[in-house]
Image 1 (cartoon, rainbow over the protein chains, first blue to last red):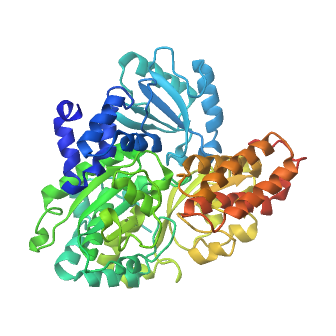
Image 2: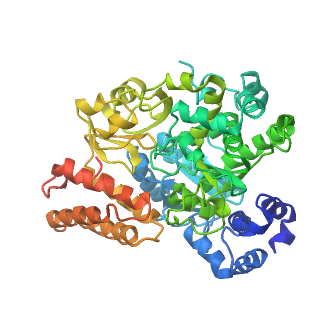
Image 3: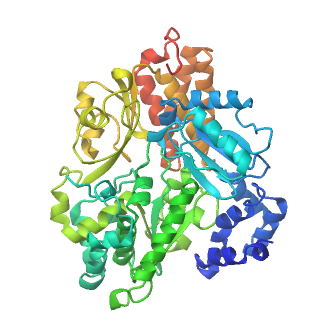
Length: 169
Length: 419
């Protein structure tokens, strides 16, 4: 139960919205719900639905609509590489291909240690610093910009060792 | 000229409250609340000629003027969803000059009689939201947010709300649905948000850059603001420059600067010294501009860009050099819009789906000519039929690339991939 596990955070979330508009809390609650597992479990759907007086289906509809919510387990960290037009003009497609080649996985695949899933995503508003990606993990989201395959391999190795994303400048 | 919006470029510590205050910070908000009536602030903004910087270019003061005074409460919502491919200006403002933006939110709230404001950030801006939360707490401590501000009866609170990855939430009614905890799908308009907005109450939705202009206008007056830029497009604008340029980045320039200045003087010229082939003036939503001398020397303001058969939009300038085939470019933009279409209206949902299949056929070289004709036909059939601008935008690059760069779609074209 989120309210038992994270009582302070849940309280803070509800304080942002008018008391009669608690449905507004669904998005921040979903971020909280996927913090530990990296995805939203069925139990969490029901828990949030009950907190907000809506149905599990309503909550699942939100999970399905927005790309930063996940309903399946993946690597502990999701490395989401932007391959949209401006980044692609600066070599993002080749960057992603080489990265996956080095890791021996396909786009969408996960490293054998279960730490990193590499995905291609749409624009992240980092167009001038491509190749770039974000890492979504238990601690939130961090951007990594002006990246090379070598720097990214270092980052992945560090993630595997420490279990925490390391800042690579 | 010193930066007016990207002030951190001249004053690197402007993101710290004491530095911001030392450099005139919050004096505009104080002036508005203690010396001006809300309507006077609105009139000043109207007179300044400030137009919305999110892309639509609608006059900001006029938008505020639609808020009725017989329905309460009112809300201000800052649109920080910044998701247009090629746009990355609002992020820089919020990261590096956050108080000027927050002061703008506060001024907009005072002018429109709102006691609560929400900042809707795209979910990827997680660290930006965390930093804004800290700055909001600083403002509460310093007495710039809370109850009875400056010993008046005006009170204001600002909250951040994170989206979760959906381009469509940049559309203002989809954004409001998202804050309400629903899927981000646009509403049928009218009623417009000014009357029926957040929680069904009168709401002003303004872009981050728009709001960041407000302290300048209140402090220095409408006449000063209008002296910058061109008669049709007052003030300064942040141009996000990306693609095939040596120095991509944000450039704050007066309206009326040319594409040539932006690309060659500020952007350091084109990658590999090649000629510019096409310019997208408004991100992936843009028409494809043929980059001839006339286009390069066109002033970047709302009216002049229109003479090129394109729009200034959010001023996200994507430069494409002659190593690229435009069939590859629209393949990218079509996949973007197919992914981001919210599925609510049929022309966009089905149109984007079919455009994707057709461009993939063209890419594979299957019936290139008839597939191209069909693609153009599908795109044209979508135009003026979609519920919101997303569907309309998805067709812009497609129709103009095929019409203005026909050689790139000939079966005999060289390559077809990004070189």
